[in-house]
Image 1 (cartoon, rainbow, N blue to C red):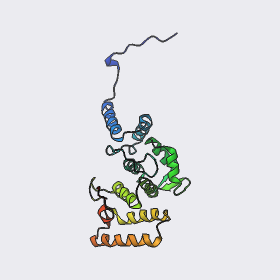
Image 2 (image 1 turned 135 degrees about the vertical axis):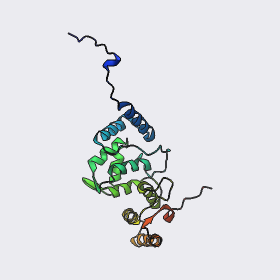
Image 3 (image 1 turned 120 degrees about the vertical axis):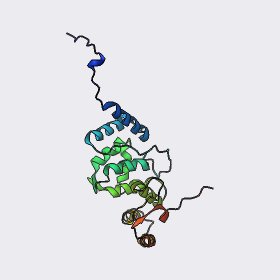
Image 4 (image 1 turned 30 degrees about the vertical axis):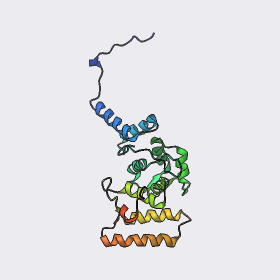
Length: 218
């Protein structure tokens, strides 16, 4: 026999007191992140929330850009999200990283193409993956280093975007070694010229003004 229809009244329905705030924060996060696939992103959001992991949420809305060497769908904001989720580890498992990539609605074939730049098997050093991601956002090696500084810095947005020179030189060497057009002597000469300015300040930090010159629009 079919079950009889059950009538509910407001007193019978229990709404958890934390639900309204949870949905409010979820809505704000979705607006800031602008995921291409809301369902896919939502699954990653609530999965991370249930585990107490960093959420796949951008700090702010990004304006669309079309300067990438390849159409990965990746942006500086999304790379920063991945860094929040993975940056506390020296190495990340590729399976876990791919899952986080998918939860940001990024195409998995582009993730695998990115790894072909420096093939690995089961895991990758996080700083190297971040460097590869920065290199795909368009422009030159110097532009990639600009993205890196803006992602890693603890300075407020729009500030000098300083990071330790040790980190800068490590990533610069890594990316330069992947570029056959840059010789080892050119790489070391460039880093030596920057190191002089850093040592003069005695704080061990390098910022955008030390190496990046914004082109003026005519």
